[in-house]
Amino acid sequence: MSSIKSKTLNDNYEIEIKSISGHSITVDEPLSLGGQNKGMSPDELIIAALAGCTSATLKMYAQRKEWDLKEVHTDIQLIKGEKTGDLPSIHRDIVLEGDLDDKQKARLMIIADKCPIHKLISGQVQINSALV
Image 1 (spheres, one colour):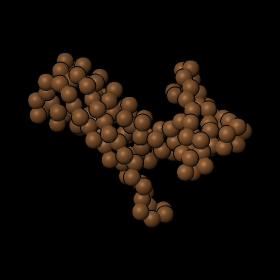
Image 2: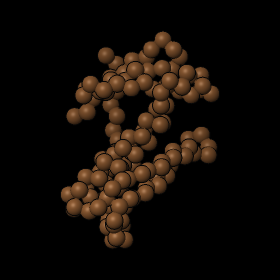
Image 3: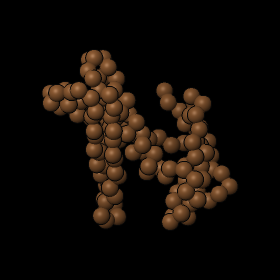
Image 4: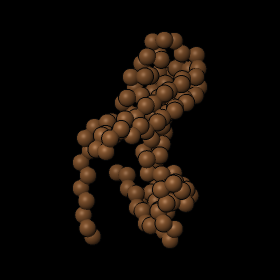
């Protein structure tokens, strides 16, 4: 199970986030939204998770198959809906470096959609909140 704790800091939207594994990051909003831009915005964190998960999933799969995947590069954009209430979309470009044939590349593109974060954000996630 993954677990994250957060707390607000003194500057307007600056948030300290700590993981159960001992890592910490700062989240903030950009200056244009009243933040101090001291860290990634929550939107950026979502697509950063997708980038990291996509790259790791493809690397693990290629290693198990003993394919020559040297590097994975992703370029991910979160595209906000045009009107209030419209759902956003995510565009993900993937570059695969290595000695791979077309069939291997096609398979890796299918595997990219199987990364856990892709499944999480493209499905319906139940979020239960409790005031404690």
